[in-house]
Amino acid sequence: DIQMTQSPSSLSASVGDRVTITCRASQGISNYLAWYQQKPGKVPKLLIYAASTLQSGVPSRFSGSGSGTDFTLTISSLQPEDVATYYCQKYNSAPLTFGQGTKVEIK
Amino acid sequence: QVQLVQSGAEVKKPGASVKVSCKASGYTFTSYYMHWVRQAPGQGLEWMGIINPSGGSTNYAQRFQGRVTMTRDTSTTTVYMELSSLRSEDTAVYYCATERGANRGVDAFDFWGQGTMVTVSS
Image (cartoon, rainbow over the protein chains, first blue to last red):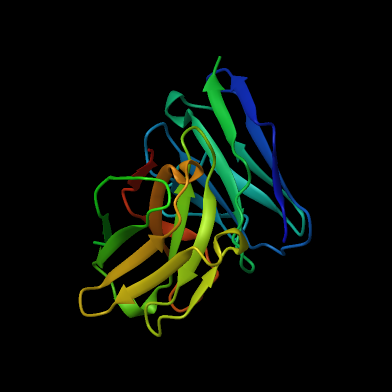
């Protein structure tokens, strides 16, 4: 099975900072990569699919890039409401594995 | 609007089974595959498997093979996930989720149920 590895596992940044989270697949998955945001005690929310397509209603400060094995989620200007854990997920084929998550906090 | 409403919290003893339901509304039930994902306390998301609500075909994650059964009832637009031989490590929130696109089977999840807490304790 393809493994998904995120880094870092957690980060702390100031409001307004640019934040980048990386997700690496153990084998190529083309662009079948999604990013989710999960706020504490809440249901996961789809942010980005097809590696770089923003889900409707998601603020434009979120962006995704990558293809093959290396992907990034970028928050261009971190806001207090972005405090959450972010997960990548491959969906090219089953099993639809998630990364282990990256917890984002405000410094 | 799309809604996935799951059944309520459950407390089970080790060795028992649990059956969680997910009632779908607001879209064509048979056109969108349904997935199950679980999350142990303080842990990440774990994909469990998928069911095609149209024909009922399933595909389970290897680690749950033999213990999980996903079914659907098209008359009530409800999907079920039953997990047997429960152990303490199965304590988690269980989510159902639908895919973005119709009739795909491999897609990102854009609608999620509210989650069902299953506690396994003696």
